Picture 1 (cartoon, rainbow, N blue to C red):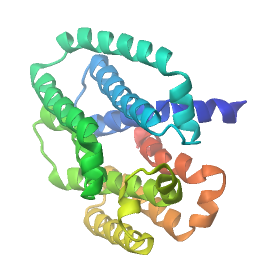
Picture 2 (cartoon, rainbow, N blue to C red; picture 1 turned 30 degrees about the vertical axis):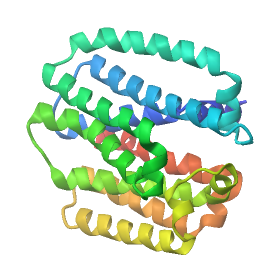
Picture 3 (cartoon, rainbow, N blue to C red; picture 1 turned 135 degrees about the vertical axis):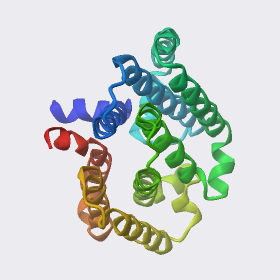
Picture 4 (cartoon, one colour; picture 1 turned 90 degrees about the vertical axis):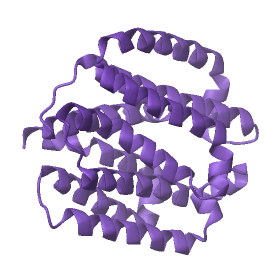
Length: 262
């Protein structure tokens, strides 16, 4: 029962939304800023809309796919579109209650997200889809604490981009055969599996090299995330069982809740 409920939450990208909100909370605490609840709802809602639109589009284009996520979005397309419309309406009202600087930054990121939805196929062809998503995702989370604190920590931004890019590449690496079967383009279908593995380990090494010299709560989080992803590459057979890689991989973005009291 609990396992099925969690799987449904994964299919609906609820775990992604929770991770985004937890990450935003974590970085806001570390940068000593307190955005209103409206900001958290807006960020979570926008992320859910983007992921849902992406899955609905993929489900429509991959009619023969047997993936549970796409089957669910295909079978429940109408209610999901209705819910998405309601969420969009609520978010449209909330934008009038947030600081102008956050609205402008969020609008710019919304434009980049729309470009991604339109050009995903071309981005995949040039090995840039995962990097593009990592950049927009990281900017969406860090933009708020950066703007409100007027502190622009580019090493933190780089670490966030590296962690997110490795996350996305790792999932593509695990799901390479399924992507090939469904004729989806990803970094894993465009690169040799061994080469992608080497690239991910290199990026993890770079991330650790940046984080370890300056130990604080933020870098400890990134170190933990990179170590987990390294273990997921080294012991891939174990993580592949029952899709453990998906739960643990996305679980890295839930880790900051542990640091709430530190």
